[in-house]
Length: 428
Image 1 (cartoon, rainbow, N blue to C red):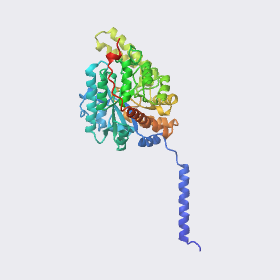
Image 2 (cartoon, rainbow, N blue to C red):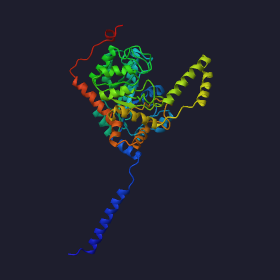
Image 3 (cartoon, rainbow, N blue to C red):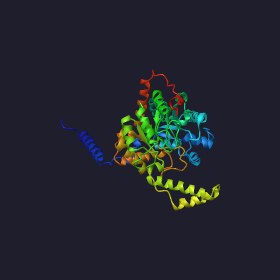
Image 4 (cartoon, helix red, strand yellow):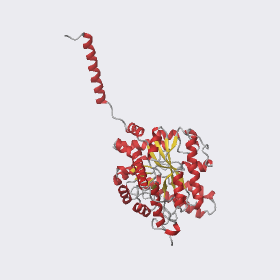
């Protein structure tokens, strides 16, 4: 039976369409790095390790959640903030550890109160913006909030002063929602040496080691940003769960004491932890670090020349900065740190902890806020990173670490809370 003319024409049309589609597929351009970055972030949003927005709201608006509408990008920018919901969305952020910062000059109960007030602020923000953010306390809760299209909001204490040298306070802050603690900030605590302070303990004291063990028992992430290299090493010696660096970069590329030496990067891989790379210029660029040191020295010199006369110091410093502009630093430099951590520690041990929230102008060139994560991911995609590896960087690695820490805590559920006192363990 001969096919009808109509059937012949239909078959010819289908064949032609199929050939055209095949040809189009063969000649279509591959996705750009930015297209790949956006696609990756849709399925694996950024979980950032550190944002100081609570402190910025405390200092600018007295800790009021309604001081500025974080749904209004223009209002947030006008207030000098680098964080708002529009930019978080554009940046592909699905989870954020909000920092509960303790200034080094706050000690004792006052430090604990500062932490508690910021915890309450984060809770009030979540209540004020229920469509944009949701509290999360476990890895599964992070995934659930992310799936709802909101920013999963976790809390981390920045500075061991916040526990007032007390394991009882540590446990209480965990129950209130703190899910990591940075053991120090810029100054030494009574039980741990900071990267910026004069070492007085040779790392962790016996009580400091008890703090790390109790954090493991609770399921609280041990954060080693800001601590000395010896404190890093001591913590890794006693840790029974993976550790994190919530906002640190690679010391091999920028020789700032805040950054992580290669020897520690290798130990982080053995421990199963993650280093979340920082965006602050003098932690990212060696040239900027040196420039910053020169700026600090010049300011000290001007203050010595003009004691008690800030009106004379300011124009002198303005003139110095005009004559000595800050060296350039870009997201490419941040990507270099990400690449270095990956090369030394491995792809399973690198993340992002930009340190936005209260940058006070300390930002890299071309970056004004939390919308920049997508640009970093695109830069790495352009360097040949696979989609699978990009997903580990953006969120999968820190979620794996959280789950591992939770599993260690579950395995120690029958262990009685430690009752050590600093006066017992650290007798001089």
